[in-house]
Length: 89
Image (cartoon, one colour):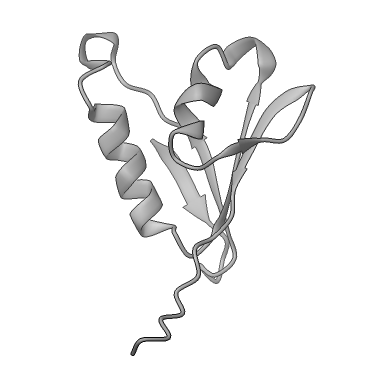
């Protein structure tokens, strides 16, 4: 997985790649990586950009984690940040 957040770690994060070796695909490794990413960067809006020719199953995978496809020329997916405000405290 290759990802980072903006300088102040506040508003935006970027997910550049998530790759799982063929021998370990469909065994929950990618899901575990994405769950860890979402836990770490839940407070940010996340952007993922991939060329259309490379997105075969990527969009369907990202949509499982709340991402939405946003473009026709590139696969651009985004996920809005989760509010950390808890009114019960």
